[in-house]
Image (cartoon, rainbow, N blue to C red; front, side):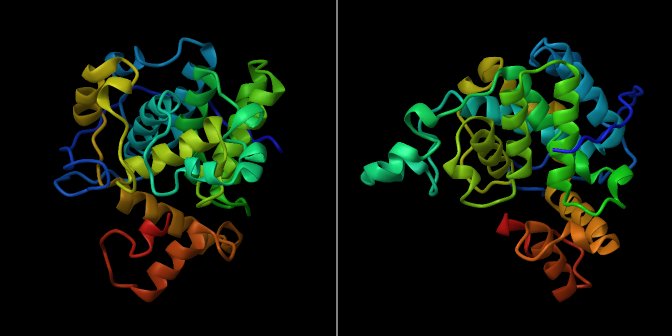
Length: 280
């Protein structure tokens, strides 16, 4: 796990835009912020964050390097991931509870028994808010996948706050594996929580019940009105492709980034959401 450093400074700014119709839908958005637009995390949202100082540093890092689109997505992912840690099982076609019919496998699967891991809330927040930090322009020229860059950045920050090594490892694995279908679902703790939360925000699996969110059912309104979607699926796909076309090693064969590049190459004039986005 190499370390990557970056500035933690963030200036106050805001962005606007209307809200899409729900998770996975980017329709209804009027404003599409550029990659330089910065988002605002309100006091009401900050009150839902863990109080550990590493969380404030992680948020400052995300706000100073990510556009509002990806910042708001990352905070929504935290809300869903936090809720998912409290739900057993979280209904999904890939739910590892299917393994119950195979006890030999179940005994060694990291979603069962003594192999199960859990992440403290402050570590889970860092995982979620920084999982896409590798898409910042500062990392465009680095010849590694954005997931690995993000994992390194998060691990470096956690270590700087003297977080235990096993929790740092959990965070690194969660970010590094979050675009790997079927692998992360078979894990536990932050790895599985991040994967399911991402899929929920993309509309690829059910969102957790509102009363399981941090802050309870009232948080659902905050998600809708203070974390607008701002065409996240289009913008995220476009940023990944932009990086990969500049540095081909960011999109190795079989990766989600490679599929997105294929979608762009096969439909060069398409201006909507990348045709291969849902292969996530």
